[in-house]
Image: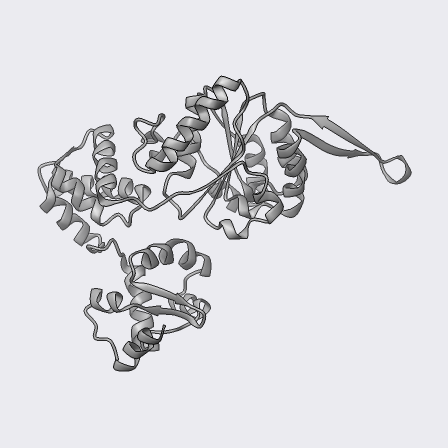
Length: 355
């Protein structure tokens, strides 16, 4: 399987807007790509999705037709890009990877669509951020495999319908609710990726350690998995950080004590919370009596971007039951108070009973 990124267009746009460069994927050189699984056997977790995909891919091969368009959604770091690469590998086709923010102008998306070959996969990350023009260009491309183009001006204007080879679009998003209905309805398969269990993350940690040639015990892998927030990307990052401590401060082997001591130094607690997460919970408790408080107020008080809190901090805090989202704002749950060793005000206790 060859992996092709939208490098030429990215490079030109990055000169005008440096932010684009940071949003695009330097796919062949990153640590994350070096440990990405290439097949279903090495892809850990998401068992229901894998079973469904095996059937869909086998049916497509027997029909001799490209796959239906697919949409994967869920919190960051759960493997949306990785599963797209696995699908391409299993189908024996190339995958072109880009992100919605890099598709600024109509010619950006048109250029990618025109370069596709039959059966290839186009992966668009953060697809909910597509601008309206790019999205409307995708409609006929997804549905009829055609590209509607206009030539000429005023009275001489003509509309041309250019045929495209049959391809598969795989979209990934952290906010499926922000996709427009016309775009969402054109996907033949929509699937949410779930947070990983500690057991699944332990397998991820051990696999990454093997690839990086790091000696790790089962207990050490479990200790890292427990603090990985249910997310493989975080687990992989922690393996690398803990291995640094193991090499410099210990004998190079990661066991339970080495993992726990290293993660304590990194200020990552037994729930996987870091300083930002604890600051968020402490702010709501100390300044707003446990909540409810609006997300904009929290962001301003923490000097953080609202999107960072919504996309990075909140999903796991909500999943872990440490934070609650209500119509009036966010508030810390009883479990959140207990985790920080705080005592709930009596008035706050009655509020939770009412909710």
